[in-house]
Length: 541
Image (cartoon, rainbow, N blue to C red):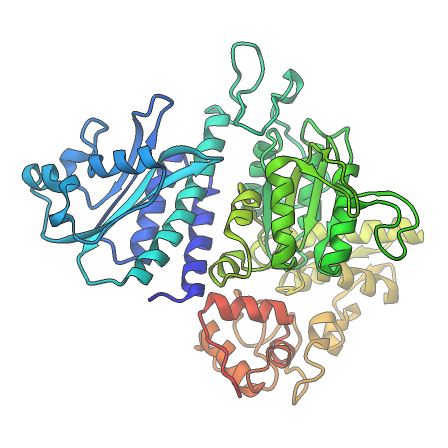
C-alpha cells in the first residue's frame, strides 16, 4: 500500500507536467509516462472526447501499434462504460470480464490475466474523457484499489482542467472566439469582452530574464485572459503576491478591486467574518454591519495567501461559495451573489495534505485549475544582480542617496542561494546600503562576511557557529534544501546527498523540525516540505 506522501509527490510531479509549455498532446503523453514511474502499470491511456463523444485525442503507453489511431481505441467497451456512468471502473481480472473478451480475441498484446482501473476525466460534472491503466493481476486488496482510484481521479481531473484550458486558447495563445465575437467559456465562467482578447505582453513589476522566470511569466500572460482559478506554488519569498497582482492587472478585471487576505494569520471564526462579512450583533464586538473580502472583490480578483493553512471545517464553507458563487454574512440570512476571480497561494504540499485527509480533494480541484510554480531565486540564474540593483535604486529614492554596487559586490551576491529568496535579497541589500561607508558598495560592506546576515543568523542556536559565510562556503550546495555551505553542527562531506544531509540534521536535532531548521539554516516549513518530498518518516523520540 502506498504512503500518502508518495501519492502527494506523484500529483506534484504530474501538475508540473501539465503546466509546461508543450502542446496538449505532448503533456498528456508525458502524464502517462509519469504514471508508469509511479504505478506498477503494464499499459495505460488517456482518451480525450470531442463534443460528440467521439475520441479526439489518444495518448497511450504500452499499447500495440495497431491501436494507436482513434478508430481502434484500446479497452473501448470499458471506456464507454466509464463515460456512460461518469464513474470509476475496477476490473480485478480482465480475463473474467465480458468488457475485454473482444480485445483478447483480436489483440496479440494480451499477456494473461490483468487488473484494469479506469476513471473519468471530469470538470464541473462534464466528462471530457477517460484515464485508464492495467497491470498484471497481483491480488491487490479492495483498500489498495480505493487508494489507486482516488489517486488516478486526482490525475484525471487535473488533466481535464488542462484540456479545458487548452480548448479556451488558440494555437498562438489567444482565446478562442465564437461567432458572436466573444470567448467560448465553460459553465460558471463569464464571457470575456472583445477588449480582453489580446494577449498582454509586459509585466513591469516582475524583474528577471532567467528562463525559469520567463516560463512562468508567459503562463501568467495566457492565464490572465481567462477567469480560471489559479494556484500559485513556491517557497516563501518567491513573490506570489506580485504574480497574483500581475494576473489581475493583465486581466479584463483590472479596473475592479484586487483584494488580498493571508489565511494563516486568522482563526477559523475570524477568517469567516473577514471573507464573508458579518451583520451587526452577529457576535461580541460586531457593532456594525461589515462587508467581507468576497463582497469587496466583487467583479475583481481575490488573493487568498497561505490557503493550505485553513481548517477542514472552514474548507467546506469556502467550497460552497466557490461552487455556487453565493454567500451569507455571519449572522445573516440574506444570500448574496458574488463574481470573483480566485487566486490562491501556498508553499504547502497540498497533494500530501489531500492524501492525509487534511485538505478536501473537492476544494483542491476548485482552486488548482491552473497551478503555477514560482522558481526559487537559486534557480533564476542571472536575476540576482538585476533584482539587487532594483532594490538599491528603491533605497536611494527613499533615502536621497546615490549608492551603487561595485562589480565585485554583485559577483559576491550572485554566489548566494538566498534560502529566503527575493525577500531575503531585499533585506540584504537594504541592510548593506544602510551601513555602507561610501557611495560604492564593495564586498567588505556585506554583513555575511561577518556572519551577521539573515542566513547566518538562522544558525545562531546551533552547537557551533556557521563555518564560513553564506556566499562562499566550501561545500557544494544541495540546492533543493536551499543552503550554500555545510549545515552548522554537522560533519559534512561533499558527496552527501540532500536526503542524507536532511536525515543527519534531524538526527542531531532529536527529530525536532524547528531545531533541524536552525541547523540547516531553513525555516521549519521548508524542513517539513523537504521531509515530505524525500519521504522521510519523522521518528518519535
